Image (spheres, rainbow, N blue to C red):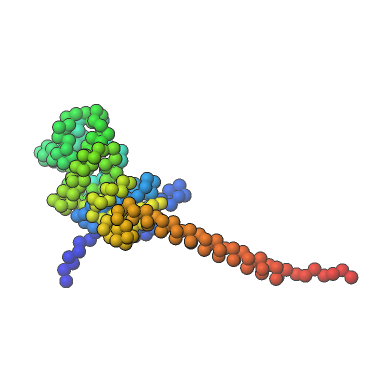
Length: 282
């Protein structure tokens, strides 16, 4: 029988990252389907950026299983197939936007004759054609971020990993970027993993991974989350899951404390029973 279900873009099991004695990612297991936008949402410091670095293969000391496009995360064969945009724009401020893209196109091994068309397309995708010949250092922070995104689009990657790409953008630019993400999935078949701590962006995703304190609270669609928590918004669903997790952790802590107290009481009782009786002097 033919398998009509393609392997996921990303698949993780038992994923852990410990840094400086602190658990940053705690036993994560999830799949990211191909050709969709998966949102990675949660408060700042919950482990989103660490997880993204693990997916692209730049995070040290990762344990567990992490497969990306059928290969182990970080495999050299994945380099041209995965585009990655960090929170800090990775561009040269003394070059123009076009020069940055031309440089990175050469690094990617794109043939010289194909570079102008690839560069023009990437600039158009991120709506920077009118700023193509401006020095990147003279652009706004949001525009520099879009130059970084254009660099990631040069190789027409199968998987785009975007770490909070809409931070600092006005509502119109945010809307336009989300339209681009949807075009990439619908017209080019790309998979997009995008992180955010802004819950209203969750509604724009096909699927969501909700994180808190290095743990995965949910892996579901926006509609599925609302149904399972009987809430009206993804933000309310997230808060409901946080309350559930806090209550479960409190109950577990109390149970553990009760068990330890009982063990201590048993040990004291056993010591008292076993203690020898002093002889009374005659």
